[in-house]
Length: 384
Image 1 (cartoon, one colour):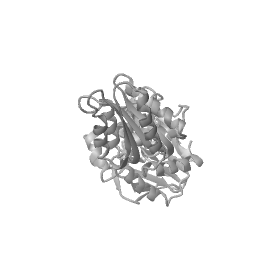
Image 2 (cartoon, one colour; image 1 turned 60 degrees about the vertical axis):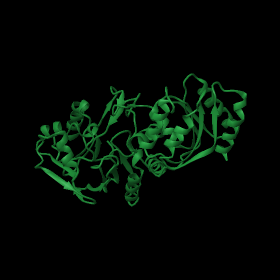
Image 3 (cartoon, rainbow, N blue to C red; image 1 turned 180 degrees about the vertical axis):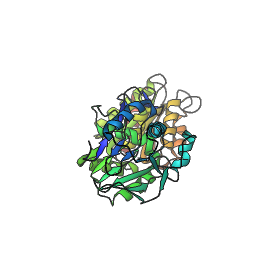
Image 4 (cartoon, rainbow, N blue to C red; image 1 turned 120 degrees about the horizontal axis):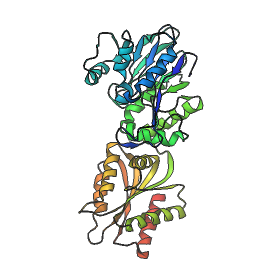
């Protein structure tokens, strides 16, 4: 139980290996759903259809013989909405609550579903259940256009849709910040302005508990901490002082240059140096670190008159997630015609508020002692 009247009826999914077909989730994922027990009963979202039976059993147990009156649909993504039809079939009298964008989208997934028993809400509309009253706040593009959140003024609970979620099943013993950050920047990160808008609306609410659609329920200091992190993340602020080095190497020589760069930065007093091999490490985690730190160094081999594909892919990922407000240093390698730095610079210049370091390090073949002064100069510029 979350409060006397609000109960958790979600499920863990330890079977999934790639969330949304692309994000590695070694500790699985949770699909959260809640039920508010009052004079009227409201179910807050469903779960992925792969776990529908377990979800419906959890709901039936929580209901203790009663029948739900409402299903509030805050988000139509299938990991939360693909059990709607099964829920309606089991409880045919249930009223679906959504907004003007919810129901046309619902018909895309379930064209046969009956949409006669619905309530369409808009900004600041309310739904009274008894002691509990839900106020709906529209949150378009956080991270789909139909998203809305609901605030329960009785227990001071924010049902936050995908906001404040994280990767990992609820029984995973892991740090909230790390997996919530990786989740945020890869899934919601592009929409910082929209998240900022939602945070401004939430600022006027007395939020004691946050109930997201993924990850743990957050209360007390954990809720305050999550709100603070979202303020930093959605404004593209610097969370941690340090330098992130991402490299793409052809035969290992560029890797040697990247690792030497890390060594020099540490010797120069850099508070934190994180390093990622873009060919082997999790791309989603590399993207997370790019946003976490205020400065980044890219090291890449030249390839086909351009740059190593892993580096090109990484830069396109950054651009698609609205990467901005960062300083970036460049290291390139090219035996006869270095092209990596030019290509990386061209892609970075398409992004917002990116400062490219004046010192561009060019390695020709193997890393040599004669290359060290240029790496040291780049370190000094990054540390200035």
